[in-house]
Length: 147
Figure 1 (cartoon, one colour):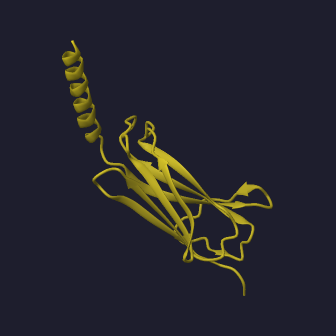
Figure 2 (tube, rainbow, N blue to C red):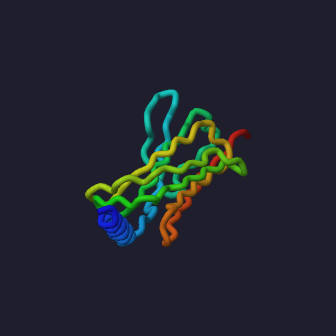
Figure 3 (cartoon, rainbow, N blue to C red):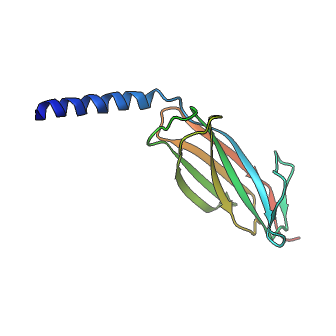
């Protein structure tokens, strides 16, 4: 009886592990930048490309939203998102977030809050870990304070 249960458990673990490997690799498909004006409490329009610099913006924080694309409705265990935010040479944020189940459109979003003031160039690097295919993206923001 114990051998039968053990054999069934081994088969279930093997099947589950092989199924998890068949889920397509996650990809980092975008890092969206949403400036937040602290005096008004309102978000500005999304900053696309290099159209928005942060120059003497002492009261502007940023919500960076990392978009991950995967198989809709399929969870891949042990896959995480590692995010590192540097301002100049200083590491501001180093965070690991579990990636949940992508929605019907295959998208999953992870928010990262970057507090003001932003006075040196900012680099946001997002990397999916726990899979054989490397998936990383970097986004840079121009910034400078002072005259």
